[in-house]
Length: 430
Image (cartoon, rainbow, N blue to C red):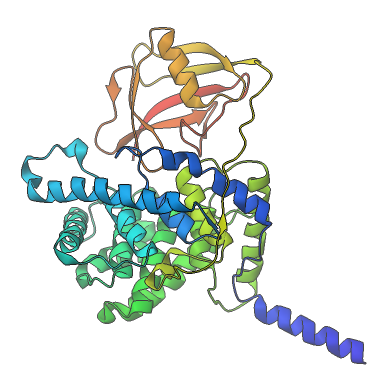
């Protein structure tokens, strides 16, 4: 009878825990290997390559880069403030291509908060005003009847709100209302849905607003929208366990972690997602710096919302640079490169070393003559802006596909084609 009572108590405890999304501790070596992939990026100190998400991810993780972190933040401040504040003075005459995006500015403000700094003073106020102007421009682009679209994306819109929230900066209800409407009526948006990444970022922004008691007139809508965002993410879970896909899962878990929802599906879904993430980590799936910086906090039980009150004194393990291993084999593979969106259509086999990235394939194709392309750096890595002289226009982008019709989840710097694959570059509208 005693054993039965103990079993019933255990089952009851498990049932209660099943309502909560918790991520059990992950093997430390796996986490350290993941963090080591960020270290080389901290040596790229030009404005084009600086990435505030690296700093945020490390500060919210269980690993650290030692003195390199402080130096990286110092360089971020020098470059971002000079660029952003310079633009704030001469905004009308500035070159649009030189402007940091709304997302870059927002992540920079998150980086300051990750160091337990509140943005303030004359320079800080100008940075806040800059981000608020970005959001006001996006609000006007969407329009009062929600028939338009942001110039950037709802993802960056949500990130901007989150960044101001963790610094306790208030926004007009109408700015928050545009994002609320997008989550509430995602079925009415173009393409019929918001991506898991976007829903998660919006949910994190709303969670921050709720915890900070900002926009109290919108409080009920904010609470409902958080619940809606969680439900949308749970519905997007794949049979393998990922939310949307492997690369959107870390941000989704940032929202779901430590959430409470009636029923047992939340806890089960999170454990399934953890298992899928572990399998992907062991397979070396995470190479993109932005995704890694979103995953490291999850593995430490943290999210961007923790930047409301960051723990800057928490102990973290010092990362050591990974030992470089050079491949002894020079095996060549053949990749067919297709561009049907130009006249005449381009199609050519390209030989590269095994393990080469798609960017290496494009570079080799350019060396062979007859193929041209241009890229632009972003926080997620380089992306195509033109191919064979054809530039992506407004609301267009160059989509990467594996033939016959499988969109790639990784960018040109991260995806490694296999022997015999056909890769297509297709200009599409969004």
